[in-house]
Image (cartoon, rainbow, N blue to C red; front, side):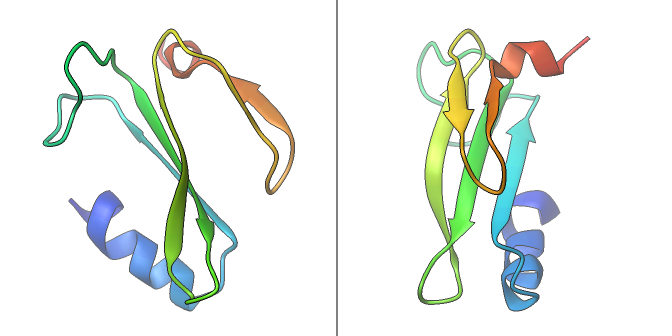
Length: 79
């Protein structure tokens, strides 16, 4: 709960430009047939609040470009 609700507010107030969260356990709002882990990438928007830029489930690959270029399949983040 802290990772989804508290940290984004604190990090945005500190003007941290990007916030990434990885859900490794089933969660409220998980899509049907969405495989874990799920990566949520956010960027700080003009209202000083995070806006989601990517939602990527295990088995899919994404290239994030901010704050640096990084290509990942969330499945590779787990042992």
